[in-house]
Amino acid sequence: MDKSAVSYQGVSLSYDEGITWALKDFSATIPQGKITAIIGHTGSGKSSLMNLTDGLLLPTEGELVVMGHQLTATTKQTALNELRHSIGFVFQFPEHQLFADTVLADVMFGPLNLGVSSQKAKVAAQAALSELGISHPFYERSPFELSGGQQRRVAIAGVLAMKPKLLILDEPTAGLDPDGQQELLTLIKKLKRAGLTILLVTHQMEQVAELADQVLVLATGKLVFSGSPRELFADPLLLAKHHLVEPQAVTFAHQLTETYPELFDHFPITLTELADALAEKLRGAES
Image 1 (cartoon, one colour):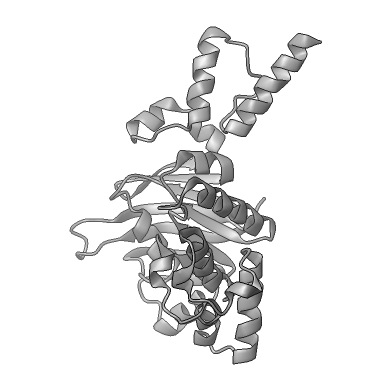
Image 2: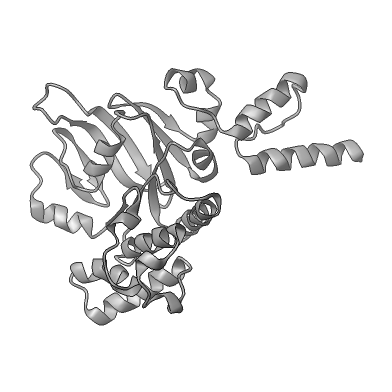
């Protein structure tokens, strides 16, 4: 069984002393070293859940255990400060938070803010930039001279330089062109292979199908589904009820099976799986 990185136990959150609830009786686990996608429409509770996980908010009721840190309504600020050393939160459009004169200085800011020495912060920043494909010639350039995709990677490097054990990504590909999106998806897969636990907040179902090991679907502050992407996309009634659009590969595969019911031995949910399955059938037909 996968070790738990985060455990939510009957977590509820109210911003108005119980009149309304942003989250209500939420229980789930986030496996360590995996990618968990958090999906749901606006107002479903995704942002509240992420802010609780990062220690920016405390639950009104229940408890959560994040990387070994127990959080309840009475948790002290000192405990929250310790927790944040373990978590990296990449907000939507993180490049808007770039501010330093140079790329290297911007990425060094996070480690320095954690009390790391200047030399160690520089080493951590260079390692993070290298991991994200930002080479040495860019270090002394202004981050505002870079392309949108490069700025996004610099912003993420600033989070990775703090060496988090849990990474929260809020719509990480928003606003990027197709090439920039693909670069970032490749990076996310690389970070998972390195053992990082990732929470991915997204409305892109193709990303859910391609990246996620687990999916949590929220609606009006409640958990309405927990399972694999394949299980989610095999439930058209659930998708329709919560206004979730299936990936293009799933739609196309359903259209094909209307004419060829026995076409797929293993129903594809990504374009790669669909292409591979069709290629296999063609090879079988030719032999």
